[in-house]
Amino acid sequence: MQKTIILDGKKTAQRIKQQLKNQTDDLIKRGKTPGLAVIIVGDDSASRIYVNLKKRACAEIGMYSEEYSMPENTTQDELLTLIEKLNKRNDIDGILVQSPLPGHINETAVIDAISIKKDVDAFHPVNVGKIMIGDYDFLPCTPAGVIELIHESGISIAGKDCVVIGRSNIVGKPMAMLLMHEHGTVTICHSKTKDLAQKVRNADIVVAAIGKAQFITGDMIKQGAVVIDVGMNRLEDNTLVGDVHFESCVEKAYAITPVPGGVGPMTIAMLMKNTLKSAVLSFESENRHDN
Image (cartoon, rainbow, N blue to C red):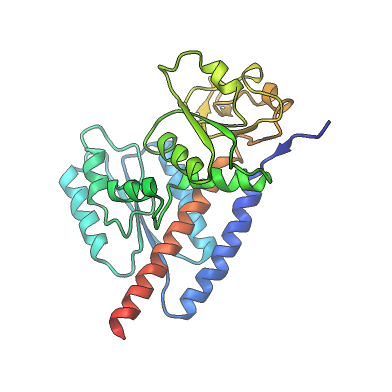
Protein backbone atom coordinates (compact mmCIF):
# COMPACT_ATOMS: atom_id res chain seq x y z
CA MET A 1 0.00 0.00 0.00
CA GLN A 2 1.27 3.46 -0.87
CA LYS A 3 2.63 5.57 1.95
CA THR A 4 0.63 8.72 2.72
CA ILE A 5 2.17 11.93 1.37
CA ILE A 6 2.68 14.52 4.11
CA LEU A 7 2.30 17.88 2.40
CA ASP A 8 5.14 19.92 3.86
CA GLY A 9 4.01 23.55 3.72
CA LYS A 10 7.30 24.78 5.17
CA LYS A 11 9.34 23.21 2.40
CA THR A 12 6.98 24.30 -0.37
CA ALA A 13 6.74 27.85 1.03
CA GLN A 14 10.54 28.04 1.19
CA ARG A 15 10.79 27.10 -2.48
CA ILE A 16 8.17 29.71 -3.44
CA LYS A 17 9.91 32.37 -1.34
CA GLN A 18 13.20 31.62 -3.11
CA GLN A 19 11.51 32.20 -6.49
CA LEU A 20 9.98 35.42 -5.13
CA LYS A 21 13.39 36.54 -3.85
CA ASN A 22 14.89 36.13 -7.34
CA GLN A 23 11.99 38.08 -8.89
CA THR A 24 12.23 40.77 -6.19
CA ASP A 25 16.00 41.13 -6.81
CA ASP A 26 15.26 41.68 -10.53
CA LEU A 27 12.61 44.29 -9.75
CA ILE A 28 14.94 46.13 -7.33
CA LYS A 29 17.60 46.25 -10.07
CA ARG A 30 15.00 47.94 -12.28
CA GLY A 31 14.44 50.57 -9.59
CA LYS A 32 11.43 49.34 -7.60
CA THR A 33 11.49 47.77 -4.11
CA PRO A 34 8.19 46.10 -3.11
CA GLY A 35 6.82 47.54 0.15
CA LEU A 36 4.31 46.09 2.62
CA ALA A 37 2.67 48.00 5.49
CA VAL A 38 1.31 45.84 8.31
CA ILE A 39 -1.09 47.38 10.84
CA ILE A 40 -1.87 45.73 14.17
CA VAL A 41 -4.38 47.24 16.61
CA GLY A 42 -4.22 46.03 20.23
CA ASP A 43 -1.98 43.32 21.65
CA ASP A 44 -3.54 39.98 20.65
CA SER A 45 -0.68 37.47 21.13
CA ALA A 46 -1.55 35.32 18.08
CA SER A 47 -1.76 38.44 15.90
CA ARG A 48 1.65 39.54 17.14
CA ILE A 49 3.15 36.17 16.09
CA TYR A 50 1.60 36.44 12.61
CA VAL A 51 2.81 40.03 12.16
CA ASN A 52 6.36 39.04 13.11
CA LEU A 53 6.29 36.11 10.65
CA LYS A 54 5.12 38.44 7.86
CA LYS A 55 7.88 40.95 8.60
CA ARG A 56 10.48 38.17 8.69
CA ALA A 57 9.25 36.84 5.31
CA CYS A 58 9.62 40.35 3.82
CA ALA A 59 13.20 40.54 5.10
CA GLU A 60 14.03 37.08 3.68
CA ILE A 61 12.75 38.03 0.23
CA GLY A 62 14.27 41.52 0.21
CA MET A 63 11.04 43.48 0.46
CA TYR A 64 10.62 46.68 2.44
CA SER A 65 8.17 46.47 5.34
CA GLU A 66 6.70 48.87 7.88
CA GLU A 67 4.77 47.99 11.01
CA TYR A 68 2.18 50.23 12.62
CA SER A 69 1.44 48.97 16.12
CA MET A 70 -1.60 50.88 17.40
CA PRO A 71 -3.10 50.74 20.90
CA GLU A 72 -6.34 48.88 21.66
CA ASN A 73 -8.24 52.17 22.11
CA THR A 74 -7.35 53.47 18.61
CA THR A 75 -10.49 54.94 17.03
CA GLN A 76 -11.86 53.80 13.71
CA ASP A 77 -11.21 57.27 12.25
CA GLU A 78 -7.55 57.13 13.31
CA LEU A 79 -7.14 53.76 11.61
CA LEU A 80 -8.92 54.92 8.43
CA THR A 81 -6.74 58.07 8.32
CA LEU A 82 -3.58 55.92 8.45
CA ILE A 83 -4.90 53.64 5.66
CA GLU A 84 -5.67 56.71 3.52
CA LYS A 85 -2.07 57.96 3.94
CA LEU A 86 -0.67 54.52 3.00
CA ASN A 87 -2.99 54.34 -0.04
CA LYS A 88 -1.28 57.48 -1.40
CA ARG A 89 2.31 56.35 -0.88
CA ASN A 90 4.20 55.07 -3.93
CA ASP A 91 6.67 53.05 -1.85
CA ILE A 92 3.90 50.96 -0.23
CA ASP A 93 2.44 48.27 -2.53
CA GLY A 94 0.51 46.23 0.01
CA ILE A 95 -1.55 47.18 3.07
CA LEU A 96 -2.49 44.51 5.56
CA VAL A 97 -4.62 45.11 8.65
CA GLN A 98 -4.20 42.17 11.02
CA SER A 99 -7.46 40.70 12.30
CA PRO A 100 -9.15 40.41 14.72
CA LEU A 101 -9.72 44.12 15.30
CA PRO A 102 -11.06 45.48 18.61
CA GLY A 103 -14.87 45.32 18.84
CA HIS A 104 -15.43 49.07 18.41
CA ILE A 105 -13.85 49.07 14.92
CA ASN A 106 -15.98 48.02 11.94
CA GLU A 107 -13.91 45.50 9.99
CA THR A 108 -15.95 46.00 6.79
CA ALA A 109 -15.24 49.75 6.81
CA VAL A 110 -11.53 49.02 7.22
CA ILE A 111 -11.45 46.50 4.35
CA ASP A 112 -13.38 48.91 2.11
CA ALA A 113 -10.89 51.71 2.85
CA ILE A 114 -7.86 49.83 1.49
CA SER A 115 -7.08 50.61 -2.16
CA ILE A 116 -7.99 47.62 -4.35
CA LYS A 117 -4.50 47.90 -5.87
CA LYS A 118 -2.89 47.43 -2.43
CA ASP A 119 -5.36 44.87 -1.04
CA VAL A 120 -2.85 42.02 -0.79
CA ASP A 121 -5.24 40.00 1.41
CA ALA A 122 -7.81 40.13 -1.46
CA PHE A 123 -10.65 40.93 0.97
CA HIS A 124 -12.01 44.06 -0.72
CA PRO A 125 -15.47 43.47 -2.31
CA VAL A 126 -14.11 44.46 -5.75
CA ASN A 127 -11.30 41.90 -5.51
CA VAL A 128 -13.72 39.28 -4.18
CA GLY A 129 -15.93 39.93 -7.22
CA LYS A 130 -12.93 39.58 -9.55
CA ILE A 131 -12.15 36.17 -8.01
CA MET A 132 -15.78 35.15 -8.58
CA ILE A 133 -15.53 35.80 -12.34
CA GLY A 134 -11.97 34.46 -12.61
CA ASP A 135 -10.35 37.75 -13.66
CA TYR A 136 -8.22 38.71 -10.67
CA ASP A 137 -4.89 40.28 -9.72
CA PHE A 138 -4.74 38.89 -6.17
CA LEU A 139 -5.96 35.67 -4.59
CA PRO A 140 -6.80 35.31 -0.88
CA CYS A 141 -3.61 34.00 0.72
CA THR A 142 -4.87 30.88 2.53
CA PRO A 143 -7.03 29.45 -0.30
CA ALA A 144 -4.23 30.18 -2.81
CA GLY A 145 -1.77 28.34 -0.55
CA VAL A 146 -4.13 25.36 -0.34
CA ILE A 147 -4.32 25.14 -4.15
CA GLU A 148 -0.50 25.15 -4.34
CA LEU A 149 -0.31 22.32 -1.81
CA ILE A 150 -2.88 20.23 -3.72
CA HIS A 151 -0.82 20.71 -6.89
CA GLU A 152 2.24 19.70 -4.87
CA SER A 153 0.60 16.33 -4.14
CA GLY A 154 0.46 15.67 -7.89
CA ILE A 155 -3.33 15.58 -7.77
CA SER A 156 -5.43 17.18 -10.49
CA ILE A 157 -8.51 18.92 -9.08
CA ALA A 158 -10.47 18.64 -12.35
CA GLY A 159 -13.52 16.38 -12.00
CA LYS A 160 -12.82 15.61 -8.33
CA ASP A 161 -15.50 15.82 -5.64
CA CYS A 162 -14.31 18.53 -3.25
CA VAL A 163 -15.81 19.31 0.14
CA VAL A 164 -15.01 22.59 1.90
CA ILE A 165 -16.01 22.63 5.56
CA GLY A 166 -16.56 26.22 6.64
CA ARG A 167 -18.09 29.18 4.79
CA SER A 168 -16.11 32.20 5.99
CA ASN A 169 -15.36 35.08 3.63
CA ILE A 170 -11.65 34.61 4.33
CA VAL A 171 -11.30 30.88 3.60
CA GLY A 172 -14.44 28.84 2.91
CA LYS A 173 -16.14 30.87 0.17
CA PRO A 174 -13.02 31.85 -1.83
CA MET A 175 -11.69 28.30 -1.41
CA ALA A 176 -14.80 26.95 -3.12
CA MET A 177 -14.35 29.44 -5.98
CA LEU A 178 -10.71 28.48 -6.55
CA LEU A 179 -11.55 24.77 -6.58
CA MET A 180 -14.28 25.50 -9.14
CA HIS A 181 -11.83 27.50 -11.28
CA GLU A 182 -9.76 24.30 -11.32
CA HIS A 183 -12.85 22.33 -12.47
CA GLY A 184 -13.55 20.63 -9.14
CA THR A 185 -17.14 19.76 -8.17
CA VAL A 186 -17.59 21.61 -4.88
CA THR A 187 -19.84 21.13 -1.85
CA ILE A 188 -19.64 23.70 0.96
CA CYS A 189 -20.54 22.32 4.40
CA HIS A 190 -21.15 24.33 7.57
CA SER A 191 -22.75 24.19 11.02
CA LYS A 192 -26.25 23.74 9.55
CA THR A 193 -25.30 20.98 7.08
CA LYS A 194 -27.31 17.78 7.50
CA ASP A 195 -25.28 14.56 7.61
CA LEU A 196 -21.98 16.36 7.24
CA ALA A 197 -19.98 13.16 7.89
CA GLN A 198 -21.55 11.43 4.88
CA LYS A 199 -20.79 14.38 2.60
CA VAL A 200 -17.15 14.43 3.75
CA ARG A 201 -16.95 10.66 3.22
CA ASN A 202 -17.77 11.11 -0.47
CA ALA A 203 -15.02 13.68 -1.06
CA ASP A 204 -11.83 13.14 -3.05
CA ILE A 205 -10.48 16.41 -1.63
CA VAL A 206 -11.41 17.70 1.84
CA VAL A 207 -10.57 21.24 3.00
CA ALA A 208 -11.33 21.69 6.70
CA ALA A 209 -11.72 25.31 7.83
CA ILE A 210 -14.40 25.05 10.51
CA GLY A 211 -12.43 26.23 13.57
CA LYS A 212 -13.17 23.17 15.71
CA ALA A 213 -10.24 21.21 17.10
CA GLN A 214 -9.80 17.73 15.58
CA PHE A 215 -13.39 17.75 14.26
CA ILE A 216 -12.69 15.63 11.16
CA THR A 217 -11.83 12.08 12.16
CA GLY A 218 -10.58 9.08 10.20
CA ASP A 219 -14.01 7.46 9.93
CA MET A 220 -15.24 10.59 8.08
CA ILE A 221 -12.82 10.42 5.17
CA LYS A 222 -12.59 7.93 2.36
CA GLN A 223 -9.54 5.87 1.49
CA GLY A 224 -7.22 7.84 -0.76
CA ALA A 225 -8.66 11.31 -0.10
CA VAL A 226 -6.52 14.45 -0.06
CA VAL A 227 -7.03 16.14 3.32
CA ILE A 228 -6.12 19.81 3.77
CA ASP A 229 -6.32 21.20 7.30
CA VAL A 230 -6.68 24.99 7.55
CA GLY A 231 -7.53 24.96 11.27
CA MET A 232 -5.34 26.35 14.06
CA ASN A 233 -6.66 25.50 17.52
CA ARG A 234 -5.05 25.35 20.96
CA LEU A 235 -5.93 22.45 23.24
CA GLU A 236 -6.09 22.93 27.02
CA ASP A 237 -2.49 21.75 27.35
CA ASN A 238 -1.51 24.48 24.80
CA THR A 239 -0.83 21.97 21.99
CA LEU A 240 -1.50 23.40 18.54
CA VAL A 241 -3.82 21.20 16.48
CA GLY A 242 -5.90 21.57 13.36
CA ASP A 243 -9.54 20.87 12.51
CA VAL A 244 -8.50 17.36 11.42
CA HIS A 245 -7.63 14.54 13.80
CA PHE A 246 -4.29 13.84 12.12
CA GLU A 247 -3.52 10.42 13.69
CA SER A 248 -6.79 8.80 12.59
CA CYS A 249 -6.81 10.39 9.12
CA VAL A 250 -3.17 9.92 8.10
CA GLU A 251 -3.63 6.15 7.59
CA LYS A 252 -6.45 6.60 5.07
CA ALA A 253 -5.42 9.75 3.23
CA TYR A 254 -3.49 9.79 -0.04
CA ALA A 255 -2.02 13.13 1.08
CA ILE A 256 -2.52 15.26 4.21
CA THR A 257 -1.23 18.52 5.69
CA PRO A 258 0.21 18.61 9.21
CA VAL A 259 -0.55 21.33 11.80
CA PRO A 260 1.64 23.24 12.31
CA GLY A 261 3.79 23.28 9.17
CA GLY A 262 1.08 22.77 6.55
CA VAL A 263 -1.14 25.58 5.33
CA GLY A 264 0.25 28.29 7.68
CA PRO A 265 3.63 28.85 5.96
CA MET A 266 1.87 28.78 2.57
CA THR A 267 -0.45 31.63 3.59
CA ILE A 268 2.54 33.88 4.28
CA ALA A 269 4.26 32.85 1.03
CA MET A 270 1.11 33.80 -0.91
CA LEU A 271 0.97 37.18 0.86
CA MET A 272 4.51 37.82 -0.37
CA LYS A 273 3.48 36.73 -3.88
CA ASN A 274 0.57 39.22 -3.85
CA THR A 275 2.82 42.03 -2.58
CA LEU A 276 5.35 41.40 -5.34
CA LYS A 277 2.58 41.30 -7.95
CA SER A 278 1.20 44.62 -6.67
CA ALA A 279 4.70 46.14 -6.92
CA VAL A 280 5.14 44.85 -10.48
CA LEU A 281 1.73 46.21 -11.55
CA SER A 282 2.52 49.59 -9.95
CA PHE A 283 5.98 49.72 -11.59
CA GLU A 284 4.55 48.84 -15.02
CA SER A 285 1.79 51.44 -14.64
CA GLU A 286 4.27 54.18 -13.68
CA ASN A 287 6.49 53.32 -16.64
CA ARG A 288 3.53 53.43 -19.03
CA HIS A 289 2.66 56.90 -17.80
CA ASP A 290 6.28 58.05 -18.11
CA ASN A 291 6.60 56.92 -21.73
